[in-house]
Length: 300
Image (cartoon, rainbow, N blue to C red; front, side, top):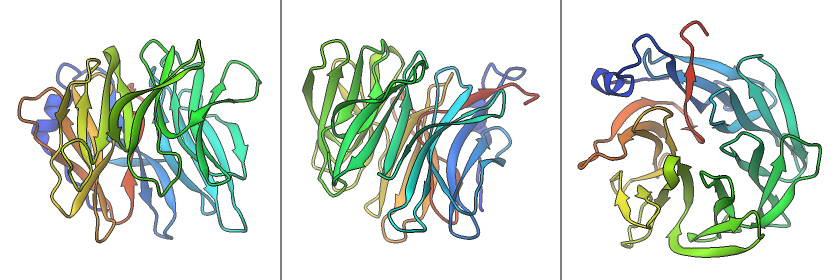
């Protein structure tokens, strides 16, 4: 694996935190056997440590809770027949892993509620993608919120944003919001392929639209639907999976070369007047992240 880390970006990301916690980004990287394993990438040292590795499973779609103490991810085994999928939560303080949902149907894109009590995710059933919500405080069955993909919680946890794109081969969909109290769904009339909610009601979208761009870029969409492009990929690249790095003004995202499918992780300052994209690291295989970064104590 080849890694690059620019010192001035690290200094900016960690400003004011010299004696505080480390910034650690969960990410997925290909192993030597061609599988996918879960790692923690330390922004300060540029080193990666494995969080979950299995020769029989691919560990994908990591997401972090707001407190930065748990990582949810999908463990998938498609080596035989239809395959199996397990949604797991790894507690970084205790080192224990809990299986939350097991399914023969494909599971994607888990995301914690801001209070840490709920976990939304996508399940593919009968060719359709649908959003489900699991209450982590009870043993109750998950409930379905609607057909679509890319869920994220509003900061007050009273609503869930998602995309109306309800099949894997569907084009970009509409940004939708599901009111958890009324159960109603409505469109926000914005087109895109994925969304991540940020503090104070701000969302990030990577999208081919508006402005008819042919390749996906990272956009900032505020609570008043004002939009700002954060990344400018070349024609041969696409930018996806934007995540907020906790405690900072930076966003990490995945840049993929369309022809080779080679991926790398970049960061960009979300409120900069002229955003500058900086390479964190690149991998020989797939590399991407979802859900956010962790703040870990120095002695962890």
